[in-house]
Length: 335
Image (tube, rainbow, N blue to C red):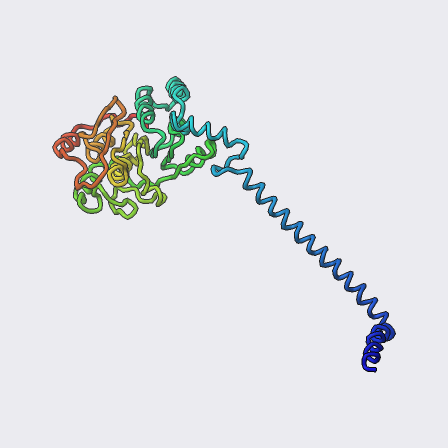
């Protein structure tokens, strides 16, 4: 009887449930089915999103090789790289282009241009050194030429006229130039030299950080990062020095001499234009030194300055005194 009673209970349970909540079960099943559909839909969307992101990442990675070039160009890039390593550096200006630029500039009839001999001397230094770190005092007719000949290097120009700096930058996009506030006058040459000699072991010493110098001849208002650059070539063709009230190039020559000895790499080429004028000639003898003079034309002097610690600008002080005592000449030469 217990077995029969148990059987009845088992048979009646579904029926009872059906009678009491048949509609509720149907509704629950529908909701469950709908809920399952939503779960599958959400899962499908998540999978699709993940697959799309994964495909995008794989495509981006595949398109670029380690050098950042398209994978389809990898073999070509490798060939170009191999060719470049076996020949001249890729940033070096081709010799025919270099010569064409120099010849065009030398044959130009523009007023205010540099004499052909001086231009070719400077170009010869850049031919040996470029691409390099080139600092130029003065902006003028040859500015685009110096920048072009130093293709692949860094060329920085300094000028006393901020408006002219802005004008030249506008005509030469990408040109790096800064204005300098000079506080000297050509007529102050004797006074400035005497002060520099008195402070030779102090503020006007040959090796120092010009940014913190109180020497009257030191240019210390340039952008800070320029004082740490290891300059390879320094060309002094400014500021103006054709009259007694012009700024003169005493500060430029002193600053170049200190930069060459303080941050240069081994030996630094320093070229002084308008060397026939007293301020340029005497200041060069005082700070660049005759023992470092390697070549000179009527208007251009080429010094090679050895970098490194030193307590004196020049080894031969007698030569400096002799040069300083020479009479002034070329005071009216073009700036």
